[in-house]
Length: 99
Image (cartoon, rainbow, N blue to C red; front, side, top):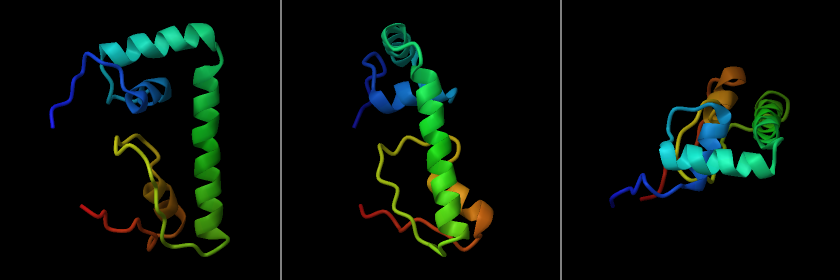
Protein backbone atom coordinates (compact mmCIF):
# COMPACT_ATOMS: atom_id res chain seq x y z
CA UNK A 1 0.00 0.00 0.00
CA UNK A 2 1.42 3.35 -1.01
CA UNK A 3 0.87 6.42 1.13
CA UNK A 4 -0.04 9.59 -0.73
CA UNK A 5 1.59 12.36 1.28
CA UNK A 6 -0.01 15.03 -0.92
CA UNK A 7 -3.42 14.26 0.59
CA UNK A 8 -4.01 15.29 4.22
CA UNK A 9 -4.76 12.47 6.64
CA UNK A 10 -6.57 13.05 9.94
CA UNK A 11 -4.10 11.18 12.18
CA UNK A 12 -1.16 13.09 10.71
CA UNK A 13 -3.02 16.39 11.22
CA UNK A 14 -3.58 15.34 14.84
CA UNK A 15 0.13 14.51 15.12
CA UNK A 16 0.93 17.99 13.74
CA UNK A 17 -1.30 19.68 16.31
CA UNK A 18 0.46 17.71 19.06
CA UNK A 19 3.84 18.88 17.80
CA UNK A 20 4.82 15.46 16.46
CA UNK A 21 7.13 14.59 13.59
CA UNK A 22 4.96 12.23 11.52
CA UNK A 23 3.21 14.71 9.26
CA UNK A 24 3.71 16.28 5.84
CA UNK A 25 3.08 19.67 4.21
CA UNK A 26 -0.47 18.69 3.17
CA UNK A 27 -1.26 17.70 6.76
CA UNK A 28 0.19 20.92 8.14
CA UNK A 29 -1.73 23.01 5.61
CA UNK A 30 -4.99 21.27 6.54
CA UNK A 31 -4.19 21.63 10.25
CA UNK A 32 -3.54 25.33 9.85
CA UNK A 33 -6.72 25.83 7.80
CA UNK A 34 -8.80 24.06 10.45
CA UNK A 35 -7.08 26.05 13.20
CA UNK A 36 -8.17 29.25 11.48
CA UNK A 37 -11.79 28.09 11.88
CA UNK A 38 -11.28 26.61 15.37
CA UNK A 39 -8.53 28.70 17.00
CA UNK A 40 -8.48 26.60 20.19
CA UNK A 41 -8.04 23.26 18.35
CA UNK A 42 -4.40 22.78 19.36
CA UNK A 43 -5.26 23.42 23.01
CA UNK A 44 -8.25 21.08 22.74
CA UNK A 45 -6.18 18.27 21.20
CA UNK A 46 -3.45 18.60 23.81
CA UNK A 47 -6.06 18.63 26.61
CA UNK A 48 -7.64 15.46 25.19
CA UNK A 49 -4.23 13.78 25.08
CA UNK A 50 -3.50 14.84 28.67
CA UNK A 51 -6.88 13.41 29.79
CA UNK A 52 -6.07 10.11 28.04
CA UNK A 53 -2.76 9.91 29.92
CA UNK A 54 -4.42 10.69 33.27
CA UNK A 55 -7.11 8.06 32.67
CA UNK A 56 -4.58 5.39 31.67
CA UNK A 57 -2.38 6.17 34.68
CA UNK A 58 -5.38 5.84 36.98
CA UNK A 59 -6.44 2.54 35.44
CA UNK A 60 -2.93 1.10 35.60
CA UNK A 61 -1.95 2.43 39.03
CA UNK A 62 -5.21 2.51 40.99
CA UNK A 63 -7.53 0.02 39.27
CA UNK A 64 -4.95 -2.68 38.49
CA UNK A 65 -5.62 -2.84 34.75
CA UNK A 66 -2.66 -4.43 32.96
CA UNK A 67 -3.85 -4.88 29.42
CA UNK A 68 -4.94 -2.01 27.19
CA UNK A 69 -6.43 -2.02 23.72
CA UNK A 70 -5.70 1.23 21.91
CA UNK A 71 -7.81 1.37 18.76
CA UNK A 72 -6.43 4.05 16.49
CA UNK A 73 -4.90 4.79 13.14
CA UNK A 74 -1.58 3.14 13.85
CA UNK A 75 0.40 6.36 13.53
CA UNK A 76 2.60 6.59 16.60
CA UNK A 77 2.84 9.76 18.61
CA UNK A 78 4.40 10.50 21.95
CA UNK A 79 2.60 9.27 25.03
CA UNK A 80 1.19 6.08 23.55
CA UNK A 81 -1.25 4.24 25.82
CA UNK A 82 1.10 1.34 26.55
CA UNK A 83 3.99 3.71 27.31
CA UNK A 84 1.89 5.72 29.78
CA UNK A 85 0.65 2.53 31.47
CA UNK A 86 4.16 1.13 31.73
CA UNK A 87 5.33 4.29 33.51
CA UNK A 88 3.27 3.28 36.55
CA UNK A 89 2.94 -0.49 36.05
CA UNK A 90 5.85 -1.99 34.13
CA UNK A 91 3.97 -5.21 33.37
CA UNK A 92 1.22 -3.40 31.49
CA UNK A 93 0.97 -4.19 27.79
CA UNK A 94 -1.05 -3.90 24.67
CA UNK A 95 -2.37 -7.11 23.13
CA UNK A 96 -0.47 -8.51 20.17
CA UNK A 97 -1.95 -7.00 17.00
CA UNK A 98 -3.97 -9.31 14.79
CA UNK A 99 -2.77 -9.24 11.18
